[in-house]
Image (tube, rainbow over all chains, first blue to last red; front, side, top):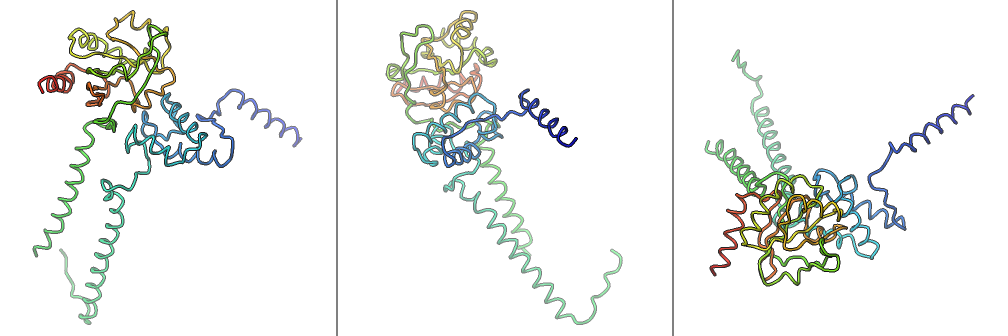
Length: 148
Length: 178
């Protein structure tokens, strides 16, 4: 009984695969696991220039397929990841990178979270100190503000 | 008490500056500024659509202005743009070179036969490699290249009479005057 149902499930799985409903956009296989990992990394961090909110790896657009081919060929030719990034940057500009470069022009973008964190910490510290001073200076219970 | 207003004011000014930069850098949403402007046009040498024994090459195009128009018979906006291209060709102000992108020869030839052929020559970019070198991501796109082979302007999307009047003609006239 159990064996029969297992066969059933397997058959259903095969049928599903056969209809092509489960189909990845990019089925590229690189010759080595190391190249495959780098290929996957790059195609996920580069933006499809046409659809713009998708990574190169996930886009069905024709131009995305062409750009994946460039990535594959450059990696097979022994180019580094930075070579690939620079190739894309020279043609499509900063927009192709989901992870922006650290350059002077967008340094504020990278610095802003840290700066805001420091400002927030300073404000919190000041507020806490002020409250602490109020409490210690005023041993008596706080006066009732009354309604309004 | 001045502090009370100073800090929110500074924060407001900072936010306004950031937003102003954002607005200035994105005149239209989704348009990628071409890093090619002011740089030498990418080199290419491709078979001519009309005559496979001929090549259309960037080297042979040097010496005079040209407008490289990226199109494809599959592209709907290119169809809308086509009348404008015919007008540009008739004006005789600039050579019009086509880059037929990711297309089929027969489809492309039929398209030109049906709508008219405004191009001095058409380079057939079948595998899309030349388009990548030009940073093309959606047809139509048009690049204005000067006689020294420098890209001076890129029109993203449909070339309209307004863009022709305000962006392309002044650049051609300025060059002719100097």
